[in-house]
Image 1 (cartoon, one colour):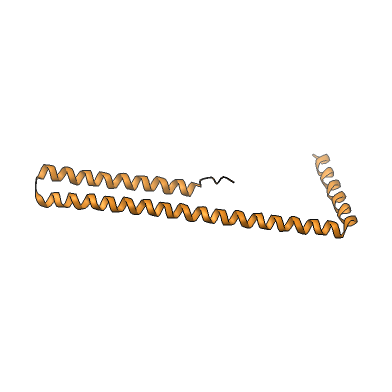
Image 2 (cartoon, rainbow, N blue to C red):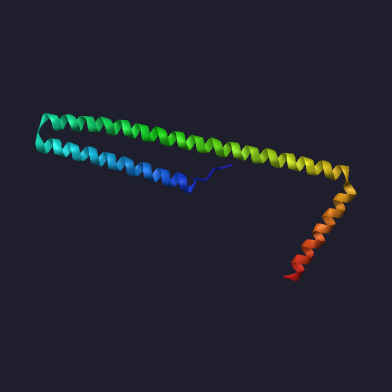
Length: 122
């Protein structure tokens, strides 16, 4: 069963991309300042900003993977639960039909008549 990406996942991915872009712009701005100023202190700040950018990017990527993994695990668990519940419900229905075949036929006939009346009234 293929899982579709939710709007929340798309929003999160968009936010992560925007954060990465802003961090890259900050690092470029600091580096440009360091080149124009020419000072060692500014270069040091630029180096630290690049290190921070690398760490922040790594953190954001890891966090994004963790969130996607948790969402995927939750979706798989929910799908498994639904399959189990459907299987159990089907088994109970089959057991009831085997135990009470005449009642089952009467109920099916009644439901069929009700549906026919509803369709006929349209």
